[in-house]
Structure formats: C-alpha cells, structure tokens
Length: 301
Length: 301
Image 1 (cartoon, one colour):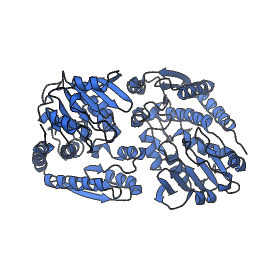
Image 2 (image 1 turned 90 degrees about the vertical axis):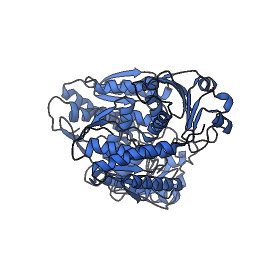
Image 3 (image 1 turned 30 degrees about the horizontal axis):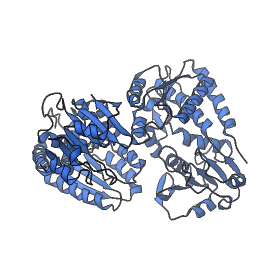
Image 4 (image 1 turned 120 degrees about the vertical axis):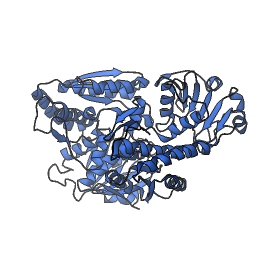
C-alpha cells in the first residue's frame, strides 16, 4: 500500500500552527541559497510556503557561495532571526560540513551542527537552554522517517522502547540521515543492519559492531527496509528479496525499489520531504522555547 | 636548493623541551589508532618518539574503529590526559569529520575541531581559557608550512603583515590544510591563488573571491608555490612553469613537482611532517597553559 507523506505532514503542520499562534511572538526563519542550483531553489520555495502557512516569517537570502560564511555569522548574531536553513549542496565537498558547524546550534533548525549530532550519538535527549530545559534537536530527515513510521503504526509512539523486536535494514550511513537513524532506532530497541559502500554494520542499543550478514539475509529478516541511496548504480531492491508484510521507505530522490517491490510492500512510503520540512518548523519552535522565549514555558514541543 | 625540514623541527623541539621541563608537570598525549593502516602506524611511532624526546608522556591506544568514538569521549573526560591525536583516515568518509569534532577543543592538539577552524576563519587569534588567555590553536600542517617558510626567510617573522607583497599559489583547498593556509597567509598580507578540482579562487585579507586566472598565469606570478595534491593524476609542476627565484613546498606524500622544477626552485621544501609533529607538541603546551595549568602563567607558548 502506497502511503502519502502529505497527510501526516498536514497533521503536524496543524499542531505547529496552533502552537505558534499561542506563542504570541513572531518567529523568523532565514534560508540561505548559495547560487542557482535548481533543486535547492525548489526546496527553498517549498520551505517558504510551509513557513508562511504556519505563521513563521521566512526570508530567502540568495548569495554568492563565497559570501555565505559571513552571512551565517551575521544571522547567528541577529536577535530577530530564530532559525537558519542552508540549502545544500553549496560547495559539494567538506566545506559544506564546515558551514553546517557555522550555524549557531540554537538556530540550527535542521539539526545538522556537530553539537546536535553529538548529543544524538551520545543519546543525550535533553539540553539545558538559557530559557528552559528542552528536548535536543535531531536531524530533520531522520526524525521525519521516525514520525511517518509512527503515524502508520510501524513504530511505537509510546513506551520507552518503541522499536523493540523490530529488525530494520537501512541502506545509507551518512552523517545527516542514515547513521543518526540507525543510532536512534537501535536506541529505541530495534536491531539495525546498516549498509553503505563500506559494507554492513549491526547496530544494537546505539552501538555499531561488525557483521558478516549479506544483503539477502538482512532483507529477508527485516520488518522494515529504509533506503536513501542517491546512486543509480545501486541495485534496486526487488520483490523477491523482501519478506511478506515488510514496511518500505525510500528517502532518496531516485527510486531504490523496483515497482514490483513497491507493490509487494505492506506499506510503501516513497518520500518524506513534506514531513522533513514540518520537522524543521517544529525544531524552530522547540529551539525558540529552549533558548529565546521571553517567558519560561514548561511545555516541550 | 633543497631544504630539509629536520633542522627547523629540531630547533622547535629544543625550545619546546625546555619549556616542558620548566613546567614541572608531566604532560600526557594519547594517540588513537583505529585499525592496522600501515602509514598511520608509522606516523604513530614517529609521534611517540617525538613526544618522548620532548618529555611528554605518550600512550598509543589501538582500537577497533567502531570503538573510537567512545574512547575519545572517555579521553576528553580523563584529567590525566592533556592532548589527543587521532590517526586519520579512520573511516575515510564524512564520519572522520565527526570524530574530529568529538575531540574536546581543549585537548585538540592537531587543531582540527570545528571550534578552532572557525576561530581561524574568523581571524580570532586569542581565546580566553579557564587558566589564561592564550593564542588560538591552528591546524598543525598549515602552521608547519608557515614556520618552515619563516625559518628560511620566506615569511616575515615580525611585523603585523609578514606576507605583504607576496603572491602565493596553493594547490589544495582542503579544510585541514589548504583553506586554513590560504586564509592565514592572506590575512598576513599575501595574494593567494588557491586551486582545487573546482577551479581557482583568489584570497585577499582572509576573503575568497572568484578569479579567472589560469594555472600558468598564477604560477608565473608567484613568489611561492605550495602543493598538497595526493592524486597521481595531478600534472606535476614543470620547471618552465615557474618564475626565477620561486620558493616551492610540497606537503603531499607524493611528488607534485618534476625533478627539474625542484632543481630550479630557489628553495625546495619536500615535506613538512617533522615540523607538523613539533607543532602538535607546541599546541599541547599552549593548550595546557590556556586551559589546564595549575598556576596562572602570562607566557603564551
């Protein structure tokens, strides 16, 4: 069954809109675009619309990529700005990692700064902000994956171990999606087989170890299969590789499953983008309450 | 003329040894090796010998790469450890960047944490430590390049703009050597042409802008040519590309100049490794004084 991410995103947006209205303070997000890269422009427009629908001020700043670093520094220091997004790739190399770390963690609504990644890997779920204690921010796409699974009953919403007894295979171990996801889901009780070009790893309770498992064995044992491989040379997952009743999700921009595999899946989630954007907005609200809110609030977004 | 880095390294080591003796406290450095990679083992032995010669305790911890993250966290928290080195590559992908950011900046004797890189790019040269104000740490290899140039009279040791009127071409724009070097030298007054696979950039006063200059033009105008290209497909710099009296330096592990170009150079510096290690030890001392020294010292290493 094909699952649209829009319904879940709409539900989150409704919640966030109401919370923003109750704040009584206008929140402002600035998006940084470092050139004319078309997919980034599309994504920028998408986030602009999402912000405006939720009652968040949004300003797009389109600059030469060589001017971005100083522009981020200025936005970090500008008290009228509560959230910063950067549309990657900017340089398409390690300099992008540097830019991620330039964004003030208190305004890093995408959760990409090493400050937040470190909290996640160390399983520190709370931070003590200047205004309140709050939940740590996690990278938007990983969070979006968990939220759409949860909304479809595939991930326990309550309880301390919402993924107990689940076996999950994840194809992608990037520092911005795949590894955070493997760590979070395994901290929630799942047995994770994580594949990338360096081979498989097994994650249990947030900790990775070597494993000799093959792709075929991992897929066959999995309750969920999550993919995010941007390369057309990745052999698409075929129907006969999946067990019955497998939940499949692809967050890459290209297809990682054959049409037959998509059809065979118990649930097939073809993208999470709309929820990712909603999670960024939710992070904006959360960071505002933790670090910037005028009055102390006990609520945690 | 061929210049050996050993003489300069020896002079720095003598200075550092004396300063360490005068501290009266034993300093301890831990090196982390994540596997059996032979060049890293060699480098580890080299740093062990350098530490011991200087009177710094050195301990090599050889672990499975998947256990490194927690081992670094433990070393960050261990008050008996003053400096941490990690022998990269560990994963050989973006996860290595994450490990660099896991090292506590106060123990980051290699200067690779985003905390220090950010200071460098923002041209903030001092930090306020728990024990004293101190000079910011900069990445060891970039610093080693400056120090060997300085020792050979190619870089002004005194004055606020030690590289005024110098034109320098740098082939390498990595976040750990080439870009810090371009930023530092241009902040010191040089005109820098920085080349990498994305093309040339011009750095003036720490700021990069686009330029259409060709390799031939840049080389022809340069007083100094600095290379660090690890790829054999890089066309080696030939004698007829260099002007007379050019100072040439290669910090890559493979040759980036032809033998004729090396011979033509006014000075040819074939490697900086020994000075890099000395700079790590100097950083150990500096960080100790800034963050950990029992008594407040006004001296800045």
